[in-house]
Length: 512
Image (tube, rainbow, N blue to C red; front, side, top):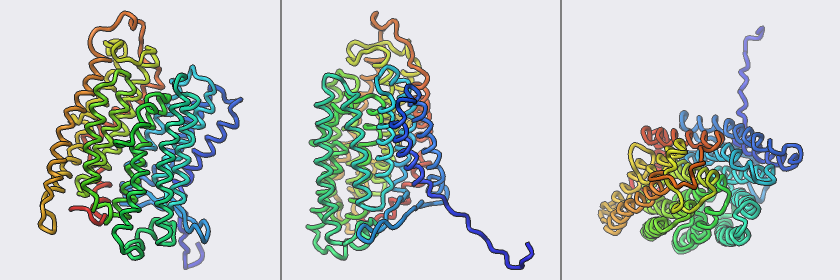
């Protein structure tokens, strides 16, 4: 260049997270509008859209994992609503990563699953809207934005259950799902209204910095936390507000069960950390023993109910109730190991339970049987599905070297950490008791998972199932992929914990 002063042009950072969400939204809309032309090709189109959305999230993930993050995108909405945007940090990373990866794999899985169902384009359009809503919830930086994403997540799920659920009960199940989740959404809406009343802003960063100044009463903070927690716990389906989950997860189309159990209920746990542990940490920590106690009760209840089930998908549904009890207990410890383990378990549960529902879907798809008493010996007929089921089941049971072992070990260690004398020199023996009870509940988890493997894949094969064969490749490839990820995070848990642990350590009111 002839000029001595060289102007350095800054590279404009593309809003990858925004484009990723837009890809899902407009892709779903295009599939729905072009359904007459796409026909059976809608599944491949949806898989391509979901994969493109996943690829667009790689730069933000790289920013958080490799560069130390966070990844931020924002814009001004209006003077009233303030700024909106997307924010990916160490707290949002585990659930966002789980939603993005499991979302894509569930779409690929659905290609084989939906071959015989009617109106495939509408199915895939709703599935993409569902994934977009979950991904947006984990990234939202404004409570209005969060609430809109929360509702977008619920609406397509209702239609997926209503139109493609079990014919005998789909209307009742869809209505139950809607009533329970909207009741929770109402509690969240009121809680957000109180936050705005006291702070005068909808932006999470502003609320987090100003709320302690504007609200001096711990009782008021507790009220707001209880309202928000009620809404989030409905989504997590903890005891005793879990009644919607077993029929919904059992009767929804299996690709949607994968997302419901593997990702959607976990958005409640993420929200509990973002709004409870971080923003309302003082109030939440004062109620920590109750949070942990509800988690332990949920562990036992979900596990015992899973042991009693004969329907293959209901067994896995009650297992999800139990596993959310583990996460709630971990978050209630307010200890670095506990909260880090709870967030890490969001990845592990998403992949493990998503994998198990996929294996159950293949079994039902090929045998047309849901009762485990009528199954058996399918490992000879479905070796890939049987292997995947073993990986998922052993991970949920907490067996090393699979990923579930690492997160469960950390969650229970967090319980013992909370029981030790803190800065004030006071021990909390109630957490020691809860941790011991939590550890003992793993026996039940191992019991219902081994029962699932034995009843479905081991033993003699009934004559009526001699014709059964392995599922199509579009269903087995996602299962193999998830199996590899479970082994990878089990052997190298630092891949996730190196991001999660520093973020947890930075939270106030957390026991170091």
